Image 1 (cartoon, protein in one colour):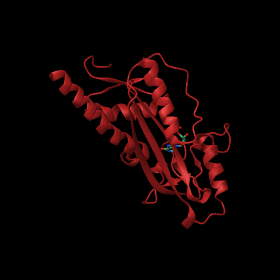
Image 2 (spheres, rainbow, N blue to C red):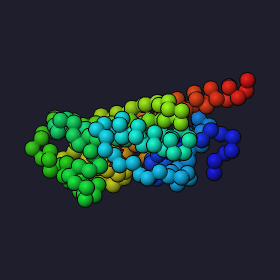
Image 3 (cartoon, rainbow, N blue to C red):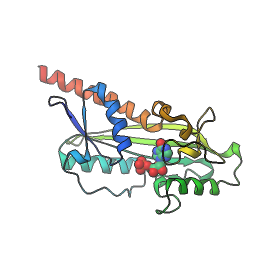
Length: 209
Ligand code: IMP
C-alpha cells in the first residue's frame, strides 16, 4: 500500500503488466504509483490520435485533470520499414479489431511473405508522458531496433514479440525477463524515472526550507 508521505502519481493504464513494470522502476525514486482502479477512473480514453505522442498526452492529461495528481501514460507500436513504417500507431488494431495477438503476428508475416530477410528491418517505439495537474508535461521516448522473422518463435511476452528478432537473433518471446532491460518501453520509462527522481528531490528540498 502507498506510503503516506511519499508523492503519488497515477499510472494511466489498465494493463497490469505495464503497471507492475512501472512500479518496480519507481521504487528507488520515492514515488508511489496508484493504478486507475485506486482513484476515480475517468472513462477510458479512445486512442484516436495520429501519433504515439498525441495518444499518450491524451491519456496522461485526462487522468491528471480528473484526479488532480501527476499521471504517467505510454503509447507504443511496431514500425516495419518494408511497410513504410506501418502498423505504427495502429499496431493494436492491425489486420482488424477482431484479431488476437497471434492473428496479428500471422497477418504481419503474410504481408511480408515476399520480403527477403535483408529488408525486414523494424523497430518498436514507445513514448511516455508525465502530466502534472498544473499543466506541465514531460515526454521521453525509447526505441528497440530489430527485424521481423519468417516464422513465430518463443512463447513469452505479448503482441508482436514472437515475430520480432533482436540483434542476437532471438525473438522477444524467447528472451523472457531480459526484455525488461532492453525494451523500448523500459528505456523510455527509465528516462522518465530520472525526471521523477528530480521532481521528488526538488519537492523535498522545498519542504525542508
Ligand atoms: P499500446 O501502447 O498498449 O497501445 O500498444 C500498442 C500495440 O503495439 C500493442 O497492442 C502491441 O500490438 C504492440 N506492442 C507495443 N509494445 C510491444 C511489445 O513490447 N511487444 C510486442 N508488441 C508490442
